[in-house]
Image 1 (tube, rainbow, N blue to C red):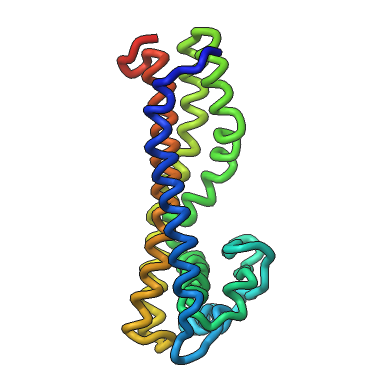
Image 2 (tube, helix red, strand yellow):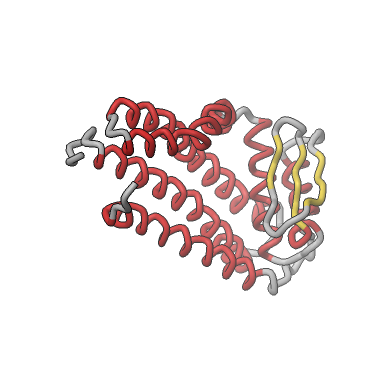
Length: 229
């Protein structure tokens, strides 16, 4: 397939946003990893405070390998915190750990968007693995029907990412409020927590924008939304 310069016009904004968001996450985490909280709770201890405060006693907090590999697994009810978060008492560590605890609280309280996102995982996995390639093959074969099939599959990825946004923002908002409510950080330290979590949230926005622009390119180029084939 001959390279299409128009493709760059569609994907570069999303790529640029993704790189910028990633840089902000690393910069914010690095900055506030050097700032210790006055109370001195580690990330694991801060997460435990939030879980206990929400009446959650069946979630296990464990260490995980990798930089910022922190996540909550609703199936095993495990909150995995990376080495730089689990045992650190920095503002950055507390922010990340309590954000993940926010997901555990969402799960316990049956937060609807979280359940919708979980239900979309299988479909999104299929869409991400073959949707893009089906669209490319459709373009190569000049088959709008095949492009449309690929677009439908790839749209599952976009839907998953869109649903992810309220899930992530809600978890961060819970963390921001609860860390002060439970006395984990001071009002001044809360600014650092906000900076780290706001930067992390941008990565999810960037991912959704990138997927949307990629989808629009194929629909436009195939003539499905008014562009020339």
